[in-house]
Image 1 (tube, rainbow, N blue to C red):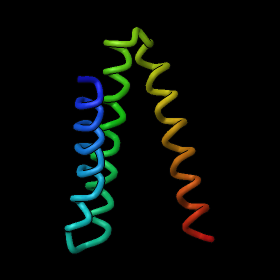
Image 2 (cartoon, one colour):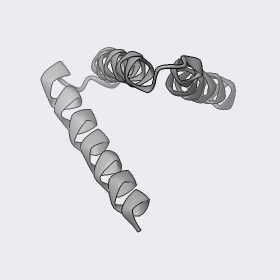
Image 3 (cartoon, rainbow, N blue to C red):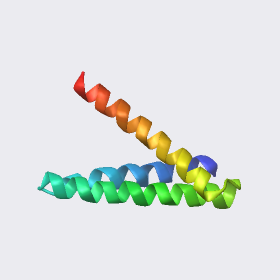
Image 4 (cartoon, rainbow, N blue to C red):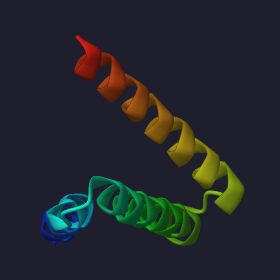
Length: 80
């Protein structure tokens, strides 16, 4: 059951990141994708708070730091 839930959530997250880029204008697509990512981060922090007893602000901080690291690595790899 856990694998099914994780797989479904991974799929929804990936689709949420990718679908906005079907919009013809890149800036609009990027803004929509950024909003989707922000919503996802809040939802993840909420889930960690509710089900894993992590204080909401701590969970949000951990998730944001992880996201910034992933963004930085993506930018670094993209410039290579």
